[in-house]
Image (tube, rainbow, N blue to C red; front, side, top):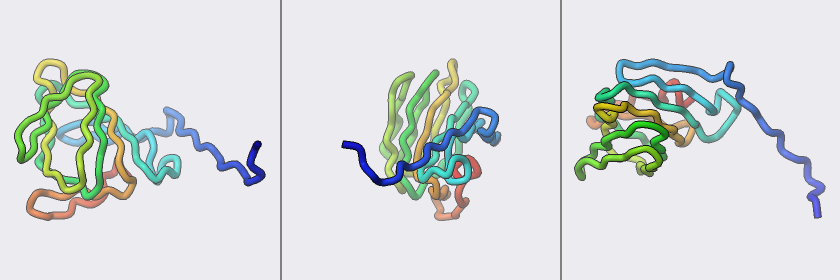
Length: 134
């Protein structure tokens, strides 16, 4: 039986509307976020050249990283975990991490997390909500 409640509207984010942000460490393409598609969750693609490394940082929300192409070393206080194409890592809130792209193949990953997730440095410095997350 079909509901008599009004159906929620579907939002489509077209390729032409996606936002790209380049940092010294990676290129992030926002696929959906609170300001792009009015989503509660953010979804973005990360591309890193071979051997490129991000800074030590943490997020105040859980993130899920799926390696689409290439690979990465996920460095945490517990050591290093290598992920390759098809692997997924669930990173809990508060985990200090560093992402290092595969030295030969680089990294392409899809990442999702709460649209209000804030980035912090290990010393507690609040870097705010990254542009590709908002």
